[in-house]
Image (cartoon, rainbow, N blue to C red; front, side, top):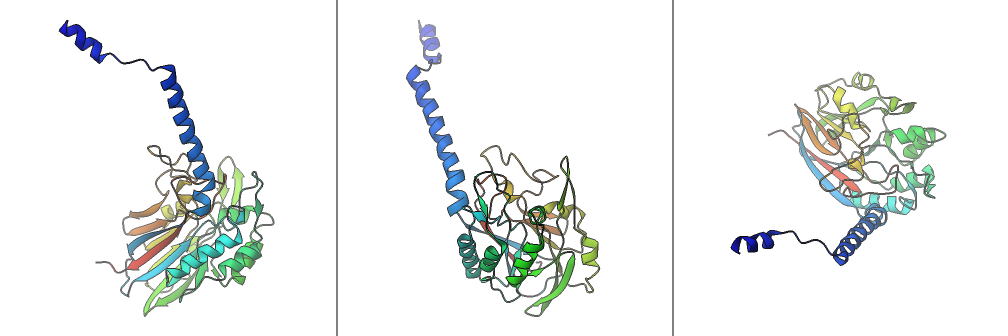
Length: 306
């Protein structure tokens, strides 16, 4: 009898119809709530500051704060000019020494009733950015893909007071510490089909303009460019991946626009003495959805090596 009682106590209870329906309903509610959050809350109302402290080889001056804005993808209703102005106000409140814009200012959403924000409008919003060392920008792949090409984006950035880098470098100084800031064109500027692209990036041309051994910071929209970056470039700042844009618990990002998968998807990466920071960005691409990767202003504090 004892053995029979133990056997009976250990037997799994078959779920009743009511329990099954409750479980299905709970899953349905969770999925609906998650979708509502991903489409209606995180892209619209979340904005975080994500900070990194980076020891830059050759840096001997006081810390320098860099505010990075990536992947606006300006469009109505997801990223209107009013939201861009709010992001600018938050960035200015961080009191950065330098502001960098990492590309993809225009939208790629044209399947859900969205409308593009004209470059003159989002450019006027970006004109409010302020930093002692100025505002510096590169183009992203979507800025080349949109008709009529990158010319309106270039004009909007220049009207906003941003210095645009297309395979160029300039020497700057922060409280006596000289450093180089370089920027390249997009690695994915021209789609060739079957997942292949032709780029406008030419890091060699930018580095030929560097005429001293001062530390060097590179702006490169796609983090895949980091693979070919020499040790002379101490820090690369990138966007493009949106941190995956959707990151599921226990799964991660189902899609990463990179040849290297998760390797350069997000955050601070160090390979030898070369360092990379990939911003999670601000807007949406493909689908007007973010989940687990809230829009962010990325703040990088450059410090001396210990």
